[in-house]
Image (tube, rainbow, N blue to C red):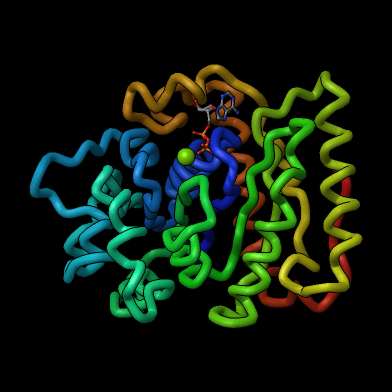
Length: 278
Ligand code: ADP
Ligand code: MG
């Protein structure tokens, strides 16, 4: 199983849109996917039409209670499951504060489960707190969505440092797999400039750690597309809401690209920076 966390501590960069539609795209390609909503705002759950009523279990019960993954997981389609969240999760940070081993609860819960999924994709909250740490210990790969914006680099070094520390102390297999450019507008120079700046930043920091030495920009860029912004209100992935849109085209292309790299993942990391400017 490939285990991926979609992380950026900034809000509004396309994490949830990417987690939901990439998961749905992979499911469309007949992969078995478990999407994990780790954000108290529960946007990923709402995006797929999952609204939890009182008394229904959520990822909060997995982290702070006795629930198992199969208690909490729900089926969206035959190939797509979700471990949903609701606002209860906002209390987890505080409740887990005194807990020994609080950063590895999610990992342990999933390891205790017999799973037949090909992918686990975690949608993270916009912070680097205990929830995101749980994601970083439960996965092997980090996908970083970036919006081409003049502040895109801001905060990147803190995120990379966090990934590096987690890989050294808690999860040696962890790596930054790639960067997804979201809300891309080909006509602007900014997108090209931001790509170049991020690339230079990563290359210049490569010697300090290997967790991002094999990272790359995914060739697929997610164009700005209004259908992607509309789909969540209808509780549908882009493939159900607007299958002929640019948004559907781009996320299916990203899913295909990720499947293509499945075979090469095992041998990545033995190179110096694998950055390519596309
Ligand atoms: P995050 O999870 O990082 O906070 P979201 O995925 O929720 O970011 O995206 C922020 C907003 O931008 C949402 O309203 C979403 O619908 C919209 N959005 C995301 N990607 C695109 C895109 N490619 N084109 C247009 N709107 C987008
Ligand atoms: Mg989000």
